[in-house]
Length: 431
Figure 1 (cartoon, rainbow, N blue to C red):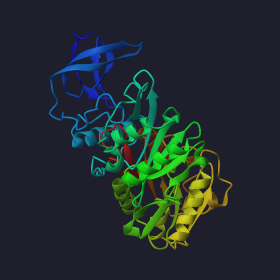
Figure 2 (spheres, rainbow, N blue to C red; figure 1 turned 60 degrees about the vertical axis):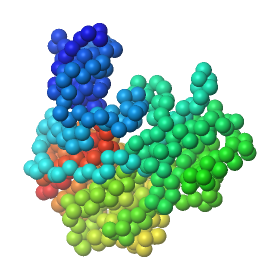
Figure 3 (cartoon, rainbow, N blue to C red; figure 1 turned 180 degrees about the horizontal axis):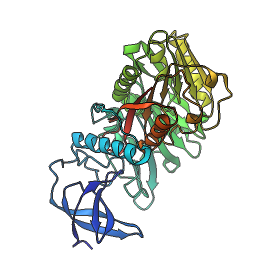
Figure 4 (cartoon, helix red, strand yellow; figure 1 turned 30 degrees about the vertical axis):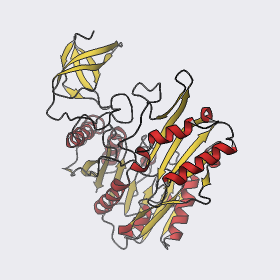
């Protein structure tokens, strides 16, 4: 099978090259559009085949040397071999193809892509941990590209450097613990003020182990949290009372969060995204704004600085409470928050019956089609939709245009996850 040569005609949504052999699609890991490659590890399926690159015979002009020596084994990144500008162009194509194919709509204008530093950007991540008995070694990292094993890595180029440059030291420390077999995963949460590691352990840790964790935190200026059970069991080990936050200086806002709370992975891009979203939404001082899937108030509180009243709605009650606390901490009195399941019919609630001039959506991958049955209101003149999944955005764009009479004025990608195939985007709708 390794003797098969083929031309790569496209890049798939998950970052693999696409070839066609005997009329059948073949998805080729490590290949780029425009290349001629020799294949290995061909695996046949009914409707498609999969393979990996054995040798690049004719390279794409956009091919670059991956910065990380673990690239191709670790599944944390899939596009480090593609020039960052070409990565963004590929993601823009994915977005526009989804609009055309799924939503049957096209934006009147393409927004310039937003990007920030492509390295050391991840302030949130979940690393797997496993002591491998046969190797008598601890492994800490993302899953391998095949998803079955923990990647054996020494450093990570996309994680916040305070953690990414210390993977080997972290692994060595865990390997020394009595309870090394009980550590299942490590959650990373980097605030502007503090960087935290949350250790999920399956059984109680010994006093010696907790001392070793504290010593590692002190030596590396990292806060240490333990998670013996569910999300509510997370508690600081060192320092006592550790509290994470990040700042949005342009709006004089500081948001407190807990280590397992959802925040945008890329802090630099988050600031740029908020600026971008507010510029598109263009709130006036007398506007009322509805912010759906509001989380901690990431958009809500900046919007409150620019408008008369903002209503934030979020499904997770803990995040809603922290959003209220953040509003109070920042002296913001014109933001109100509600906890509601936005996949269920909420049209009978007072917040859903109220009138809003503007609406912002930042849903999960599943999108917002359920609430688009009854929102936006007739008074809403403008909607900004922040999306982490182009297919659900395209579907919902069709609903906003066909059912609610909006025009898709502009859309573009935001490179929230450089070197991955993840497509974050933003769209503006007006009527």
